[in-house]
Length: 279
Ligand code: ATR
Image 1 (cartoon, rainbow, N blue to C red):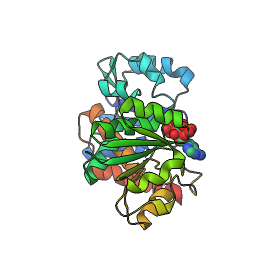
Image 2: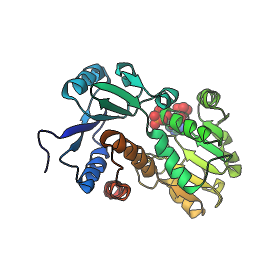
Image 3: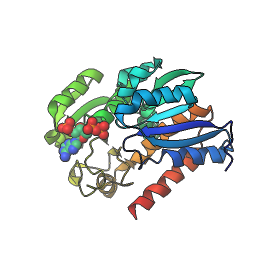
């Protein structure tokens, strides 16, 4: 333990927060780079009713950086001094950086979507089927349209798909029309279908997936969802939700410390903990 009186505090807040793997991911990175006396990362359960007091605490204690998760990503915005353009457009802040008392809100979720996808294929002119139109789907819709993909949003509640498609540019369909995905290049699940403990569920019949598809499920518990398992069986290329968690975290690591997060170390820690959860 190398924590001392000069160590800067970074933290995750949410409600619930107990399941968060961000402390393990960030602290493993600090250790790997030998900066674990300079930074420590913890997590705190903060209810929405306490968010204003929490922000006062960030200022008072000079907390260096905060990762925000459910239900704070929108609510927290009104207490910050600056919000960057990307976070404004997505309408959510997942990262707060405290620069000498000035609290800046940013959104690194888009990098969590962008980096794993662009590693596999350029998004330009690709046909992307986005399943879901909730909070998580917004960062996906923003990223893929920014990269020049053609977006079709499928959602149970068609009105929400229409709103999202109108805002970011794209088409909207009901989830029942999802048979059309046969003609798409990339399928991204941003619904909660298949999330632990409903891991027997899948948003898409296996037969609709082919070996031409890239399938990205942003759910990371379980580590490999039924959708991803079946996509693999169909010969599709797959991206685990853990990659989104990892890359949004690496971007936060850079914002908090100025250092590039050690990707392999941080990925291994996540996989180790996610696999433990399954056993
Ligand atoms: P998140 O912040 O994780 O995106 P959310 O905003 O509640 O959470 O969105 C959940 C998404 O999963 C929505 O698109 C939701 O569809 P509706 O807009 O119709 O509610 C989708 N979803 C959740 N459970 C579903 C189910 N059983 N069948 C179909 N869609 C479902």
